[in-house]
Image 1 (tube, rainbow, N blue to C red):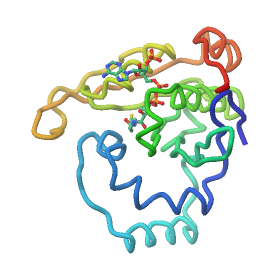
Image 2 (cartoon, helix red, strand yellow):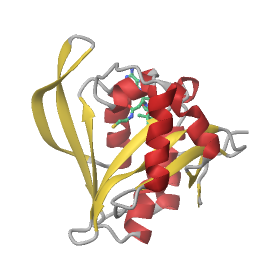
Image 3 (tube, rainbow, N blue to C red):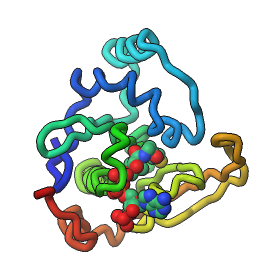
Image 4 (cartoon, helix red, strand yellow):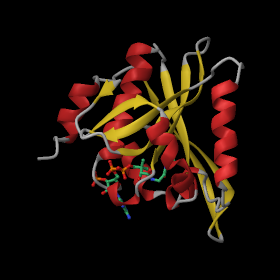
Length: 191
Ligand SMILES: CC(C)(COP(=O)(O)OP(=O)(O)OC[C@H]1O[C@@H](n2cnc3c(N)ncnc32)[C@H](O)[C@@H]1OP(=O)(O)O)[C@@H](O)C(=O)NCCC(=O)NCCS
């Protein structure tokens, strides 16, 4: 468990999986997949869950459920891929509950995840890819001190528009820690 200011990151258990069908068919998944609107059936979701439960492949990522301080499931954040040899981690981020966008929940979850990657997993770098039209992520990257490291031109088509893929990265050097970032960004618990 990673305890935050607005959210906690917890094991991705049944309460979260029960929301997957809705989240994977939602606006959140459109952005997370850089422009896909591919409907997913309940059977497909169940098959994915079954594979997660039974897979014997070595784990190359870490998944967390994101929940409010009151315990309401909001989405999933995690490390999609990591290398202990190179000490780099690729992050993934989804607040599946649309009504909670823009309230600081995703930034709190990101701070927890970055801190976990640096402080617990001893990564030296984290990075993620997003679509250029994803203004919320671009804003979040600025706030949390990620640098734009690469732009792949016209890499995707999102709702009919050609968009670039943006790769943002943040080095561990200069990371002041979760508490200092929360203070710097003025994140406060909900009253
Ligand atoms: C991306 C995501 C995780 C961010 O979480 P969130 O809780 O919405 O983010 P926050 O509220 O912490 O921050 C979002 C920022 O974007 C800003 N923002 C929102 N809409 C905006 C717009 N149209 N133009 C510019 N900035 C905008 C918000 O004001 C906020 O910045 P602020 O704190 O300076 O006001 C969440 O929106 C999400 O899950 N989106 C769908 C999936 C996705 O895009 N995943 C990321 C794939 S890389």
